[in-house]
Length: 329
Image: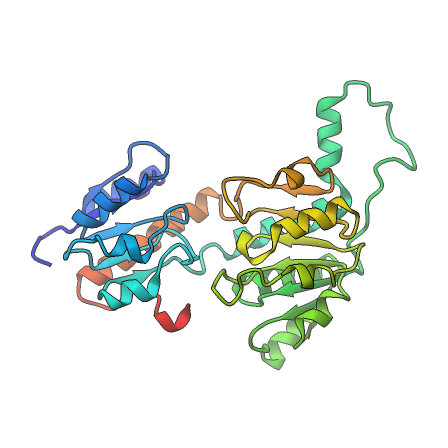
């Protein structure tokens, strides 16, 4: 690039230490507030940036990229998922795309395991009762009974880094590990996790007590848990999603829970974020979290460091370590 310091436009407010480091290294244009950029602001950003640093809330689609200036050569996503970016269109315009894989694994797995525990044991219901009622009569042998997770069958959809991290946690809680994945894991990994592979997602869904989703959102996984598949789920089973909301047909899920055809759900992501399905919001059998899976101070700092490393590698003429190729989408 012609400039000594490339123009880096950041679309959301990042941790202060990350912003400080980016200012030191680049000609960085920061977002002063923590609101998502409007479409007009995004258009302005891609017109003038050499490097764009978006987040999951920014839709970097073909129409937006068609308005990009000639200097835009790198989109360094602040996040693991890249479903918010049209990677094929970026590649066609010779724009490199990177993300921040790996650093969110343990934090997201912690959130998934928390929901796996919270939903069957009715933690949220118990907490809300104490907050809303001042006349709790005390312990009762028959009140607020949930289901134990020990000995139950956990079906993991997507056995990548996060899926395996969840499996390790669930195994420690005495759960039986089952999984469906595009590719079967090696025998060594299966042995270590004591995991049973299901080639048929339909057959696995029908036999699990808890289902936890850890696959990315791609055109192939949109509504992977479709209305048809959700109806295969046992009525006493629970669904946990810390991946992407679009993987589930949310309207059908809400209806099945409302009718008692699925026992409950723990959701950290939603199909139409930030809008929440009213039926899910009303249900006492659903635990809702505001997309907090990677929300730790350490995780956000690690994400920022990944972004900076990718930008530095790119401007130094090297291949960024976390480049996303069209074949990966």
